[in-house]
Length: 243
Image (cartoon, rainbow, N blue to C red; front, side, top):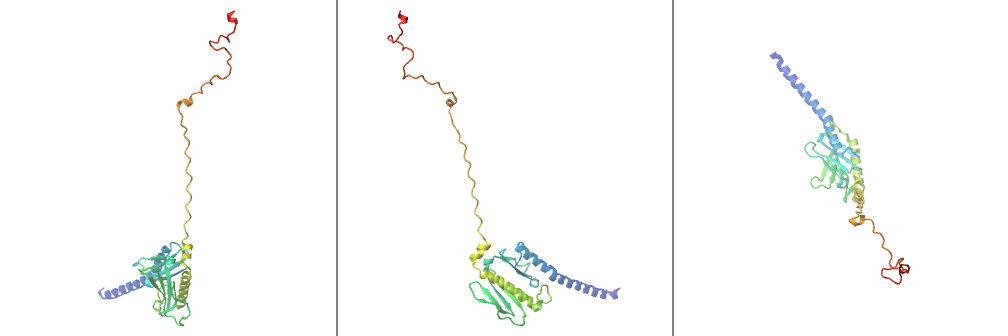
C-alpha cells in the first residue's frame, strides 16, 4: 500500500488541478458574464439597451439606452458600486486604437471623426466622459490580444464595430441641445386636475313659533258707510220704536 501512496497523492493533486481549471473556465465564461448581464439588466430597469458591452476579464460593463435616459457603468464588479447616468450627464467619448485616439467628440470641445484607422488593430478601448467630478471617465477595453481566449473576446474587427456604435450613439446625444433632451426625456408632468366644486350648504330656514300659527282673520273695513246705526245716533235711528 505504501508503494502506491505517492501515485495516489499525485493523481489526487492532478484531479484537483483539473477541477480548479474547469471551475475557472466555467466562472469566466459562464458565471461572470451572467452576473454582469444581470447587473446591467437590473440597472436598466428592464429597458432595452441601444448598445452594450460586457467585459468579464476585467469585471466591467457599459450599456446605453436613450429612451430610458440611462447609461450604466460597471467597474470592478463586486467591489465598486454600479453607477447610472442620465443623457445630459454624458459629455463625450474617445475611441483608442493601438493606444492612439482614433475618434473623439466632446460637448463644447474638439471633435475627431473616424478617419485614421490603423490597418493592424492590436487594442481597442473606449472612454466615456461624464459630468461627474468624483468619477469623470470610464475606460472599457473592447479588444486586447491577451483576452483572445477569454469570454466575450470579440476580435479586432468586431471590437471596432462595437466602438463605432458607441461613438455614433454618443455623438447623436452630444450634438443634441441639452434643453431638447430634457424636454424629450423628462416631459413636464401634466397639470393637476381642478379640484371639484365645493357643495353648496343647504339653506337653513329659521322661524319663530308665531309663524306656525294660522293667520288672524281680516279686520272689518271702517272707511265706508256702516249697515247699522251707530250707538247714540238718535237722528238715524228708526222711527218705529218711538211710535
